[in-house]
Amino acid sequence: MPPISLSIYLVLAVAIAAEVVATTALVRTESFTRLGPSLVTIIFYSLSFWLLSFPIRVIPAGVVYAIWSGTGIILITLAAWLVLGQRLDLPAIVGLALIISGVVIINLFSRSVEH
Image (cartoon, rainbow, N blue to C red; front, side, top):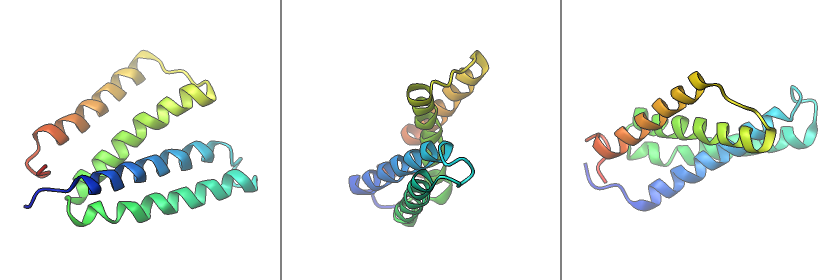
């Protein structure tokens, strides 16, 4: 497999950021009864999935999804803590640390992703 360009990782990073914006807005949609947050959610999820279609062409789908979802979970949790004031207990923090570990292991040691 040829090396993966930095631009593919940049596209993946923007896809993750769009997903975080969409999920953060989702909390404020009140079951899609509020127009503004609902439009933000729909637009940014659409953008995220469209952007996700590019790295999945050159990186195995499972690896792309693991990075996208794992990083998204961590960033959404951070946004929920900072923006929404949500708190975590110790088991949640340990679980999130395991997710971070998994994403790091994939990126550093997996031969499925040639840098």
